[in-house]
Amino acid sequence: MKYDLLLVGAGLFNAVIADQAARRGRKCLVIDRRKHIAGNIYTESVEGIQVHRYGAHIFHTDDREVWDYVNSFAEFNRYTNSPVASYRGRLYNLPFNMNTFTRIWDDVATPAQARARIAEQAAEMAGRTPRNLEEQAISLVGRDIYEILIKGYTEKQWGRPCTELPPDIIRRLPVRLTFDNNYFNDRYQGIPIGGYTAIVEKMLAKADVELGRDFLDDREALLASADRLVYTGTIDGYYGCRFGQLEYRSLRFETETLDTDNFQGNAVVNYTDSTPAYTRIIEHKHFEFGTQPKTVITREYPAQWKPGDEPYYSVNDAKNSALYGKYRELAEAEGGKVVFGGRLGMYKYMDMDDTVAAALELSRKLL
Image 1 (cartoon, rainbow, N blue to C red):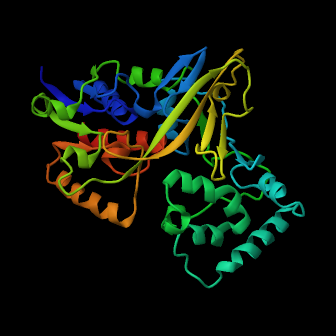
Image 2: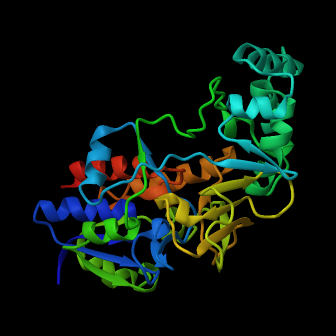
Image 3: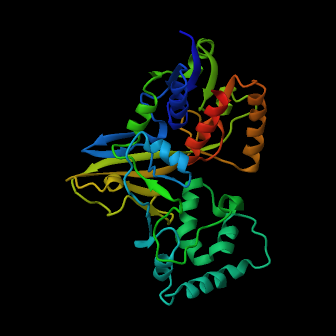
């Protein structure tokens, strides 16, 4: 059968493309090497709890078009992301706000005092251009906040000392001089009741879907099956790493069901010192205000990526950005027959609302 579009990857980006294509009467074949749809936003029910198998995903956006679009597939609850940081057994609210500052500094009680303390500590970088992430963080929030809430977490996340990471990883750090624990500033926020997999399933309802099929194993036959390809795998992998491999960071997840109704009292607790090795624990039931007698938790461990591992985050330093530019030139030479999308195809971090917006925009161009 001949298709209008071959969509490699059954995650959110291509699910949006498939939905938009179906609305315009186009036929799509969607393939994924995994045995399930929904990519990294895949959720499944365990003990009546929607478990986020590849880490916490909270939908948030300021884009009304995107919010209305995703709400056409599911009802979203009123979940507000308010993570907690654990440092040497003490707990702090995130993002950095008055609850955080009064916890760190016993003599700080007002916004003016917090602002003055941050400025006092950031002054050690006065007149100096930050050369690395550590200096950039100190210039923005001072040494205490950096040491307690940034240093250990960031070094675990990237597998390198902060003094070896580029400063532009944190161009800005949110400092909120109110007692507001809402992590995001976006107008719309929530979790889909019943999980993300159900949303993607509806988006793919009119497409042909083949799971457990790797594009690179059957490349020529698959390319011949459609007029155009949207590829959400790694762009360097598509081109056989012709110029060398792009770098990624990976993750490892340990999930267990516990015979208790409440393990940590919050959906997300970040561990910001150098130990333990995991960066956070997710307690999934709190995303939907669950009252089940058991709970499911996931420990998230950052990992150095190597071929064969799942790539999660692009390493957008100067070297990799230059290498990605070479692959982008190859993509542009395809004349539009092959289009790259998603965080792997576009080699950049994308929140879910960014993913939906980019896919809707691409759909308008393609269809």
